Image 1 (cartoon, rainbow, N blue to C red):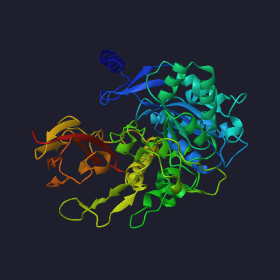
Image 2 (cartoon, one colour):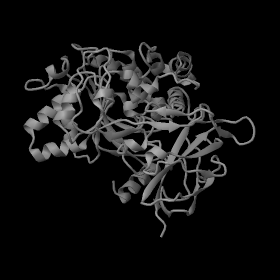
Image 3 (cartoon, helix red, strand yellow):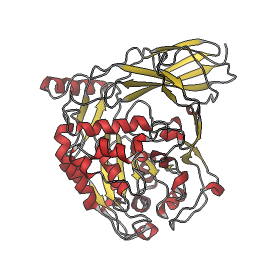
Length: 497
């Protein structure tokens, strides 16, 4: 959106008294939805269509409830009931509608915290269903469905934003849409549609996923291949980590912070049967928290970190389903490892210190943020029932410099978060750290002095070629629950002059 148009919308909203200064800008896109642009960040919300085998496992319902609490920040374009290897001959759109109806009961209260939450009636209009067929049995001539046609319809909209497809079950509804695009559109149109798509599947839950990846090699595709969920990055959302406090994924925590005393959506949140919210990582990185850039999965974020390569088929593990395994024929966005040493609270002196244990694997890339995104979820459940003054809202990190800076080897440079604020007037804590895996310079870069000061000093390492280093600012308020937001500063390091 052009800057002058953005200003006009903001001014009109402020004059009308419907938007506070510093709030969200909502511009009409269609009778059903809106495009929201945050005044400070200045970019559109990410579009997403969900494919869910809801009722195959209670975790789809859990993930849907969390998703709806971010409907003010993620542009939900479709909710499509599908099959999977766990539910081959049934789809359950009525279960999606049931959750939306519960959301409708709390939506008026949610708008007290942000005016961008859509009406339940608008969300009900975008509930669709795929065929009650398993995998590739539902792909080909005569297999069009509400769901596959809806994907094409959304792609045909004159909207420059990418369209994310979050696949919580089988992918055959997407496969059918791609089949129809290839057979009914011109080659140029098909390429344009495929270039708009961004796919994140929760492993492979039917035999259409590998078909899609082989058939459409240019398609952006993120997946931990195979059906052995224990080794997948996404499974870190509910994995118990040794030598760590896992309270935020405990059944007691869910009962206290989500299920009980939080209105109709909390009542609708089912107990864990197999694993808590296994589908949630497919959209966590779409939440605009200042950390994630979904176009760069290798930078990392709440949904994990992923790299683009052809995985070793010998390392693809077989699970308990009948989903076939096959080698990947092209690069996909898939599992990547972080080496992570947590910062922990210090009772005396400096408020934080590094822990004595470190962790290295692909799951670390996701669970390292888990306490933050669980607290964020809990706060939004509070939004369902509490007034604005009674609830907590995330802080707003502020930098005293650009988010992209350039230095030469051996030069010192400062990073400053002194402009950070909190909408509730809460006290703020800051933490700066280097994220080696996100940049090209992989060695650890030391922060001089206290990394929890709002201003820090760093000396650029010696490099022989141009390198990038990512520094993350984490700002956390002292509200209940404590909430965190981030800024990512990319430092371009050049060799000495």
